[in-house]
Length: 305
Image (cartoon, rainbow, N blue to C red; front, side, top):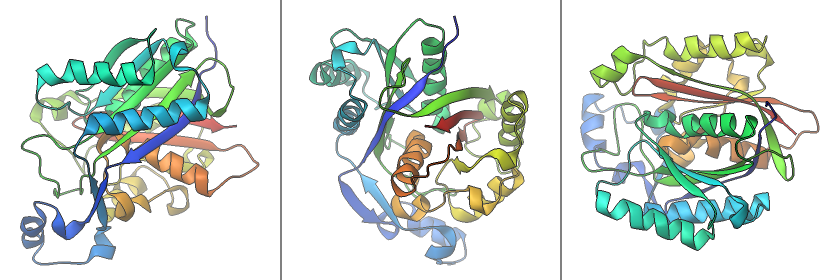
């Protein structure tokens, strides 16, 4: 059985405390490594957000997604939490996620998680949810992305300023209250990068190769994509990688780099939500969500409704 899958209720919540890039741990060290090249507009340095409770942030994002999608909580059959890494205390994880499900009212849902895929973990979770909805196994899946700092991480890194956020969307079999139809999805792994602990390889061809496969099997070219939503990494790096992937500046959405920084697994969904709220066109659009890191790359190809 093969049927369409739709995205409904896409939502996000940022950490409750907004701060400026100069307040981030690691900023002074990074600035020194750059030879004191303090040019915020060039790099896309701006605000970032912190949360004291990523579980509460995930709850709020999920509540928004359910409200906007108008899918009753007891109709959700599966809830998937996706994160590059979960908080370090395993004894806290189960009861906290259990409380989230209980507060949401998802009494009939099973629980799964998606991690280990770096910043691509959320789109990887969406890909798997899409397969299960399209196969007829499930009708309603709630996918929640959690992005927060873990011990040992530095907020101001060599390639991005990290921000805390949560996002959520309902994958559903019917198109009610849906804004997007999933056309295709792909996930690929570069084992050498993954095994070597590479966080972000500027010379990697993984992003380009993944796009070639996805667009090729749908008989599309780069120019057919109306807008691309990907990681909010520092602007010079982002522009270089996007240009190498074959996209033009008019297809990109860089504004959130300085506005909210890099929200771990949530960037592409947050950028999609913001774009859709700012630009409502009567014509259908082809939209690409893309995320990569830690040797992983995931993409979701959508058609707006």
